[in-house]
Image 1: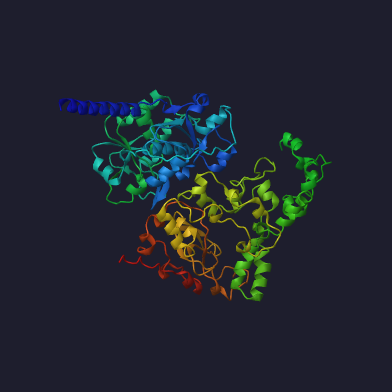
Image 2: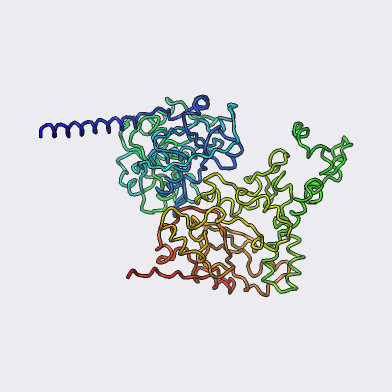
Amino acid sequence: MIMKKRGKFLSVLAGLIFVGALAATASARELEPVVTTAWLEKNLDKVIVLDVRKVEEYRGGHIPGAVNVAYGSWAIKRGELLNELPADDDLRDVLGSAGIEPASKVVVVGKTATPADRVDATRVAWTLIYAGVSEVSLLSGGYDKWVADGKAVSTEAVRPRAKDYRGRFHKDLVVTKAAVAAALGKGVIVDVRERDFYEGKKKLPFVERLGHIKGAVSLPTSTMYEADGTYKAKDALAALAAAAVGADRDREIILYCDTGKFCTAWWFMMRELLGYKNVKVYDGSMMEWAKDPAAPMEP
Amino acid sequence: MDAGLLKDDVHFAGGCTPCHGGDDTQTDKDLAHRGKVKRPSEDLSLCGKCHGATAARYSKALHYTTAGFRHVVTKRMNHKEARDYNERVFEQSCRSCHATCGSCHVKAPAVGGISIGLIKGHRFVRRDEGKTCAFCHGGRVYPEYTGDYGGKADVHYQKGMMCMDCHSAGALHGDGRAYRFKEEVKGRPSCRDCHRPGNEERLTTRIAHLRHEGKVSCYGCHSAGEYRHCFECHEGGAQSKADFVLGLSPKNNRTVTTLRLVPTVRDSFKKQGVTMTHYDRLPNYWDAPVHNIRKRTDRTRSCEACHEEKRGFIVKERLIKNGSRSNAGVLYEPRPIPAKP
């Protein structure tokens, strides 16, 4: 009887150790969050390069071996809101058809010519992590930098072998309007739009009101890039982030922009590169918030 | 011009003048350009010198004749009106939208006064849908397909397919017969070319397909949602609006499908002195092969979306004001799901 109990205890203990080891493995990154063209060139066989440019651009030339799923499949219009997450089953299909599994090491590559181009890749990277892909990186400077650096380009379209994607979704990475309202005065709310938008001097046509969410601090997305579309060095990014949100890595931080796309750039850097553990995206962003006359805004 | 290209491509073997005319013995630019032909492939016989069979077929293809514009709208007219329309509107305006050989293989056409110019530095390209199809079909179909309207990208685009993966070169060049409109063309792409009902993995999907066979088009269930409708484009001040419209196909009056608003209004050709005596013969809504297909939509997820909530089905109150009397024919009310015994 005692032997039986001890055996059961040992097997539970072994199980706990195994689960703990798995968790530790899951949180340990082998892949740097931001990779350079030189690194990627040497490691093409170790990662899935996910090209999120349009199909016609991909067909015109891409990183050898890259698979293509254009941005429009990763973020959809839901009701009135732009750049929303697809339904879970649709997202699983998109991931599976790209040959991506939860344990895949994925480097997301997009264009970097314009500010809007640059955040296609970060929004997709955020979506992959949301869907449970544990190792996701960004190519600094994107495809433009790859070409500018004279790296090899292929026009041979890659047809990935489809997988049955079974990752666990991290629903806690995205917050609703109600959660933002509850966080007012408690967590840090970050507006990543440009200063004129934050200060209420400008707004996009589909945003109902000028200004920012009450109490939000400003950290524009544009500050994280060098002129050539590559990311600034980690120290510089850390200083920018700390100046806006402080150095407490455990505090809740909610990021927003106009539609939930630009804010994924700082989300990625804060969580994946700088170690902020509790960073979330308000997907509805100003498009949703400013529509509600009761939602507090300033100035 | 790229000197290497001049050397490598047989199209340039005789220099510029065989296609563009002018005088290549002159050193003065103005003299050299005298008699220059801007769009040489307007004359199909030029390309036909080497590509005779293709040019002959293409001379009757709808992309060249644009006959579809003429034959549908003239159903709203009597014989005299149709003749006037043909002279004063079609030949003067609509006809300019035809695609020459060069429009798809050398220089993207100007649409609304905007052109991206040469497709690839005056190379003769086999296909480049993003710079050719996308321009003429960029008002509605193409951005629907790519998701650029902020909707959902078509699942075929997600999987890397472009226009010509379904719409073959053979179909675009035509089969040598002069068709009046696209529905007459044989061998048009069909969903069933690749997706045959009856082999579905899930039983519920198989049953859904069998139950709706002939009653609902593939688009009716698998269009992801809103697509573009154009208003008042013949009245000046054209506008477009996203909407999702389900109703009976005007073509067969039996199948529920996605419909798109036709921008022809009662006085579309008033300025040209052309009236439409039989305007009410055709509805203002027409079958829309919407290129935003998804495996799952509101309607594939839930029977109630159509049979209880009637989502997207056009009702009398939503029909356009002062529209055709035939519009009533597209209205359809789905039946409720029978209660389980």
